[in-house]
Image (cartoon, rainbow, N blue to C red; front, side, top):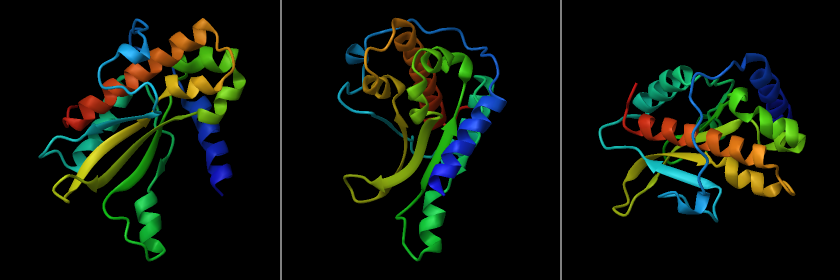
Length: 179
């Protein structure tokens, strides 16, 4: 079932992708960017206090559309856990985002990169230092995923960087409840 969902996501991503209105971001070394662990695929942002789950969802939808991303699928993992009698301990959800005008070069140069497509942003709650549930947004970083490709081209590296920067911008804005 998961395999079929992934195949459907990929097909939807290709069908609904459009040209980007977002200007290119200059490539920058991952290891020098603030807040990014070059040894981790995960980039995580805490949602600001007072910003609700619905605010985050609405922000992601509005901002991503303005950045010419499509959101072909959502996986309400927490809801599926509840249906199986498991307490998900807060929000647990994965949303897929695609903008092929930012990722085309990666896929053309390295078709095997499709295993990482579309890009995934998770919305989840986890316990903070005070043992209270706190809302977070997390990203599987495209530049980190590209490390799995042997000898990636410069063009693919720049494309992954541009895509990652756009997704991080999207996450930060959504964590503030921006539209």
